[in-house]
Image (cartoon, rainbow over the protein chains, first blue to last red):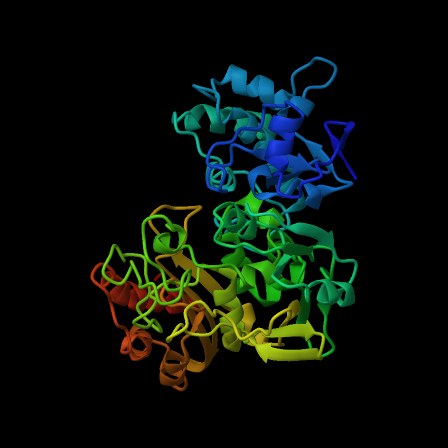
Length: 169
Length: 328
């Protein structure tokens, strides 16, 4: 029974009660994904499955992801260079305490894929649209599963917006 | 969490065989069940993962769609046929939870998710007849602003939390079930039961019975349908009131209409009385209000949730106005 974490094979725990988040943090000592609420209400534990599907690792049992590939914040930087979104968060002060940041950034990577695929959101006006324009409202709605208790939302939105559209809001 | 075994079913037959173990539960995306396990509100001794079962969304000969129970909520919301022929369903799904949760949650699991009544969750401090039958209900005389105004009983006033189910109720969705005895189908509106004296029994499913698919019958006028959710913040919170509606007009008359409420009852609430009151009536705000009032005449508000009666009426009027093309 194995799972791939940030490109490396890892053993799954014998006890099926171990969440994917606890596997990352407690077993593999990858403390990037955070345990905020541990009940699916804050998004701090967001990781990516098979490249770019964002999920909440606190509500996932690790065994459910046997054979799958998980990317946490530690896996985004390549060859020592920050992922462009990480750089954009620094540039735009997209954080204060930093606790929600790994989840925000993983979530934004997953969101980009959903936008590319044309997945509608609650604020999408025409469901028949095949192309989603990532307006300010679309971005905020699509990122609403990631809370920031410091209230660094302006910087977060600016960082993600710049990364996706090249335009600073 | 209390200890359990975990197995992944390769097909429905294996799932049903494994589901016959004592105290077994089927596991979908886990977005509700894992939380309930952690709170020890659910204590199965065996989990049977059914996320590998039927997940395709298929065209039916009769013009409907068949959605595998393991389809992810996101997959349903983004499906081209759902978006164009049943927009109310796409709208309801994207109004619920967050993108991460919608990526994990399955259709079958969404149907069987449990109430988010805070008294149900508060096992250390509050009585709950759903959690411990006969114990009493903390919500009936407690903080019940979010609780039910329709279909509740003296034992339980919890609401069903799903948005997706409200759209499915309006669309007349059919649930496909399988058990050791074979397959059967039933309307989604018959899947969940009202609490009456047994709020701990939430559905009419037999032990070990598995949801394998949800069928959307052909309903051409559902292309004119939508979903509106009213809540305390703009996103990522459960409904105070929601309305799913599909409207067919003939000139300026309501030829046919499908209506359901969320956030008001222990189950997704098909508004049969409002529908009957509206058919054949002029498509005006006055008719819409009369229809909504016909449904809400049965409302039994609690101490804190009386506002839901008028809010439900106004939301239904606004949604029907939107579907007639008015700027409601």
